[in-house]
Structure formats: C-alpha cells, structure tokens
Length: 215
Image (cartoon, rainbow, N blue to C red; front, side, top):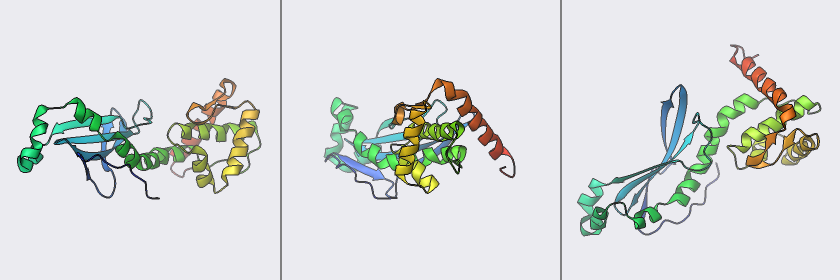
C-alpha cells in the first residue's frame, strides 16, 4: 500500500493512533457483520474518535459516519493548567477543531480495501472475452457496484483482471453505446432494460460460489 499524504494537524490536536493505521472494531448489526475503522485524537483535552463503517446493511458510507467526543480525565489530571479549557465542555471551537480531513485521509485506503474485498468475491471472475450483451452487462454491473465503494473503480477492475485501464475504459464505452450502462462513477447505473439480466448474473455467480466446490 502506498504511503498516504496526511493533512497537518492544528496545534491543539494530537493524533492518538494506532501508529500502524486505523483501529479495527468488528460487531454485528442484526444478522450482518460490520467492521468499523477508527482514528483517535486528543482535541482541547477531549478524546475524539472518528469512525468509518464497512459492510453496514443500510449501504455504503462515502465518508466517515461515526463520531465520539469524551472528556479525557487522564489528560485533565496530568496536564495541569493547560487542560482547564476542557472544563468548558464541547464548545464551538472544539467542534471546529475536529480533524475530519486528517481522519478521512487516514482511513480512506483501508476502508476501500475492506469494502471491495467481499465485492470482488461476488463479481469475479469476469468473462474471458467480452462480446455478448450478457458479458457487457456483467462488466458494467461490476463497474457500477465498485463505483459505490471505490474512488477508482476502473483501476480496481484493471488490477483484478490483469488487463489495462485503457481496455476497461473501452469496454465501458461500448457498454454505454449499447445502452447497458448509464452514467459514471457513483452516478453509474444499469439501464432498466438490463436489470433483470444483471440480477440473474449476480444470482448465478453467488449460487455457484455457495456450493462446496465453488462450481
């Protein structure tokens, strides 16, 4: 994974780790397994935790969606006069100092890697040759699904298939010309006339992978 350039933190904000990357929390929401990535900070004497969930049953979050702000008793007890400002509570100044840009940059790559892992199992393998409407529906549906969780869906498709970005760009242009794919990126969608084919492709792939031998 390439190093991520993180924004500078304000003087009154301290990153509390983990140093190796986001903290990971796993839990269930109903029958669904959900993972949350956390970045933790000290802001004006308060412990601020910013979280970004992966796999929530209601859908994909494009930005961090959890925030916790708690008075840090240890910091207040050990920092002396400098921490007296924290007794004023959660002020407007504190809220403005919450390092959302830093947390977003820190969490994004990890969040995308986790988000696309299950998706990759669902939508691959891709057709070895992309020729028929069914083939184009398959690759267009993969692009649409990736667009909901990845900022670079075409790059992901190229990585997974071992083919070039130019090849995938040409395929998606052809899918648009055929009237199968509409829109780009997060606004991408399968045209109504091809939704039943898309659903059948997904169902057949999942059913095959649910079998013990994967066939």
